[in-house]
Length: 185
Image 1: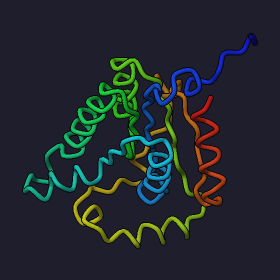
Image 2 (image 1 turned 90 degrees about the horizontal axis):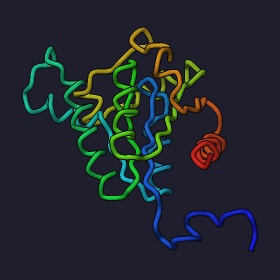
Image 3 (image 1 turned 180 degrees about the vertical axis):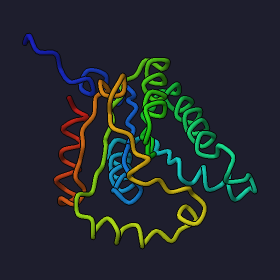
């Protein structure tokens, strides 16, 4: 017998410990692409805030109401139910401000799961603008887009959250590998 314990999946077969993965970053920075790939490979449930907010606005709720907050709260409730059922979740959201970021920390604590934050940036301004110009779906039609001025620096309690920042102007495969390396820590 060795001193090193076998990986969890080898100890318990298909039983996995759920994890909460949250994206953060400006619209068009590559959050959804990374989230979809990670969710698929982890077998996790992906929950995106944009379509929730889009549905709220499409239902006729005025844009001057706190539709973004409502969408985050709906996403949180959905994520909580999935986590409590024993499955991992990846939340695809801008998470531009500290209260939004800490909401996921609090959810992870309530559910007794690990939290990992994957922040995406696109340092190639032309590529970022191209991505934004291609957003023609219902999400782009209804969601309230955030700007760089609205995206807060990571400070205070949010600065201590376990986070990796991926530059999505780099090759997708590199970013996916980096994200999985981070998640496996």
